[in-house]
Picture 1 (cartoon, rainbow, N blue to C red):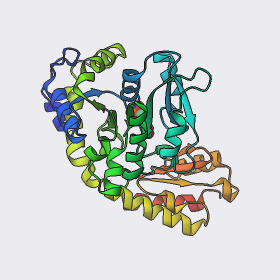
Picture 2 (tube, rainbow, N blue to C red; picture 1 turned 90 degrees about the vertical axis):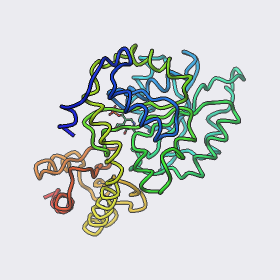
Picture 3 (spheres, protein in one colour; picture 1 turned 180 degrees about the vertical axis):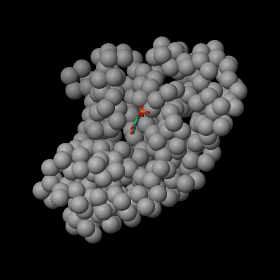
Picture 4 (tube, rainbow, N blue to C red; picture 1 turned 30 degrees about the vertical axis):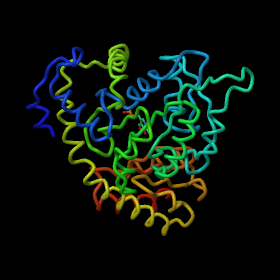
Length: 328
Ligand SMILES: Cc1ncc(COP(=O)(O)O)c(C=O)c1O
């Protein structure tokens, strides 16, 4: 990947003439069954451009489950950059909404009795609930509710390929249930940085304008796009290993600390460990894990462990043992 980056043919992405970026955008759009793609530095920027494309302006709403990346980490970003306010609903432990919840979200405003929701934003897999996968039939049912309400759908598919690998459903089939979508070439696919917003050709011009507006026209970005091309081609092929390791890790921790891991929640590459249920202070446990060479992050009251291409079998064993000794 580093060699491909060094050898990349580059141009000026501001003017749409970086050949490696353009090739990556085409390939990503193809993989998602969309007509156009915009390569940007971060998933956050891809989401923010995606939301803004559909948003009619302050006073309108974007509907989404509470706790998604857009409604938690990015909530102030959306407010600051576009004046976006959300209408949210608690989707429950799985994290994704069903058709009934989508219908509640898309009801006309109770005070004005007019349509104020410009967009329904969904996420698959859902990071905040452990990388859970929204089943295709649920996705289709939600899309139908949005279609009936005349509301477009934006899919935060940061980890769409984890959903692909977990279900065997093609990326384009998942993405077909959205108007615009984004996915990350970083994270599990292994590129250092980069995400791609994909959608219909008619939004490409405005997406490009917003990309420039948000500071994302990154000149000779072909250097990074070259990594993205490899991530797109090779990354998905090995994600099943991450899923297998996550399951093994979850089972191992579950055996050592019964009740600390909900195995049903482990569908892809994340393991949530509820150490508070064991009576351990979560912050101290995280510090202790770090000293044992195991990186985890806090997600609510759980420790989130993520498997990825730099975690091998020995790493899984190390993490399992470290967790067991964490409160010592
Ligand atoms: C579901 C989801 N969407 C979007 C993002 C944002 O991606 P980035 O960190 O590249 O801005 C993340 C990051 O973790 C994520 O988990």
